Image (cartoon, rainbow, N blue to C red; front, top):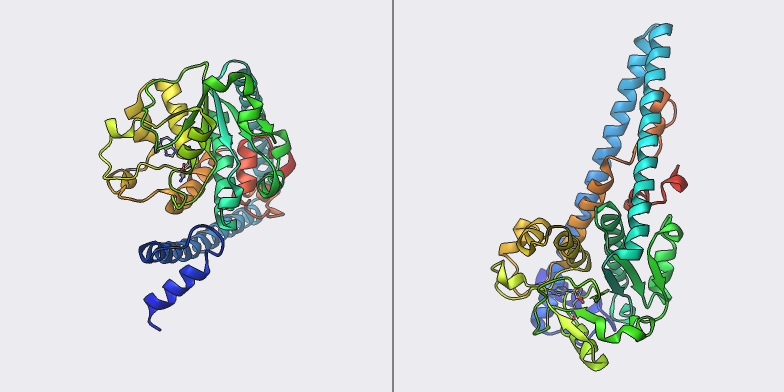
Length: 348
Ligand SMILES: C[S@@+](CC[C@H](N)C(=O)[O-])C[C@H]1O[C@@H](n2cnc3c(N)ncnc32)[C@H](O)[C@@H]1O
């Protein structure tokens, strides 16, 4: 069997019970996705190794400098290192406090945004993993934002909930965690519910403080096309799509990932400028090439980079290299996000 044949067979085998039977072109697309994922894994491993070496090199340099120093110089070097670290720790504690204040205030006055987590059954384990990463990103970015949204996770149960519960610091997240569906949780305000979906005929123009905006918690490479539109119609609630077409030239699909939609909303709340929000959130390479595809597969990498960037200034990957004695392992992305949020205490 040639390479394409093998990939096709793998593609078919890789999606048992994950959705409707795949057409030939969908199988090809999935095979391409698998190739991309394999390459991504290689790049990730190489990056991890590069970082490990970098930390090791710096530790060695520090030890050599210490060894070459006089007793007095050594004491001074260690002292100033300790002082710098103490300042960083204090700064982070202050930032965490400010973040908590902003998030608590958002719970009172912020616009409500719901991540609808009722689609676990439609996703493969990898897709659920991606969704958890996207939720972490949403939480981290919300905490950093000057005017955060009042963020809800609804339909939070089963496998997805188990994954979330395992995240370091998740129990401390300042967010509404609701096992009920949004339709139950907001039954008194049903008329204010607006399901955001790329398939809606209505275009979102403004963010209305009274409304509750719902984002489908789904990573599906648009395999389940129209599923959120159908859900909104069946429930008799409003729907709206982002006004992407008014600002960007994208040849067909305008389906974005959960975190992109959320971040666009946050940017718009801050600037009241859709164009700016789209340009800031949608990566440039994606804007031109959004042809009949969603972003989400490839975006895992962008997301990981973004999560890494978010925490860059806060996480000390080699904090214990202070004094040149112990070396901590670099944190996982999950731990880094926890550090950008509230779980930092736990990590140290
Ligand atoms: C990856 S998409 C899921 C696509 C899915 N097939 C569906 O029917 O919604 C994740 C969620 O982001 C939101 N979303 C994505 N693109 C959007 C757009 N252009 N306008 C409004 N919401 C969008 C929707 O809530 C969507 O459910």
